[in-house]
Length: 191
Image (cartoon, rainbow, N blue to C red):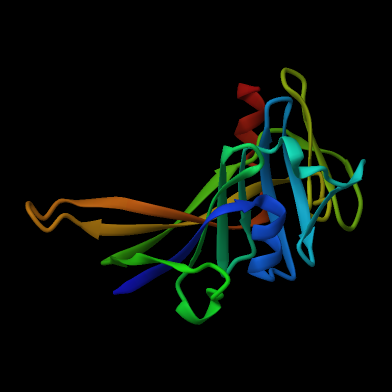
């Protein structure tokens, strides 16, 4: 059995939440009214390839992950909101998140993957620009893969059993990392 632990903080800005987690490096999915951005977090600060330091003032939701922990932040008033930090290792959760959240026992843990849209069109040793004709481009903090590879988001699903009727269900999912995988040649036939 695996247990997912969490701690929360209320009335905190995203910048404060990032600083409180002390994530040395991570990936951030940032949602704002004008854009969805994938950024790199280094020492508590978000930055993008094109614009450098990212202005967090318009972000209303964020998911930040480093493989061991995931920070979720949702704005509820002005620039403040609720932050929750998740980890399997409870010692990775700092006291700066004062609210304990009930542990989630999982009977099974499953690997899951989400293929990122677009093919590598540009990039360097730190960033990849993904492109698809219908949507445009998305820059992600991952070294540019070879032309015959794609990028995907790796997650971990936590399967729990309902105590009343015994049905199993995915009760939580934690983001882990972005990774390169071989492209499926049959995908080109459907694009």
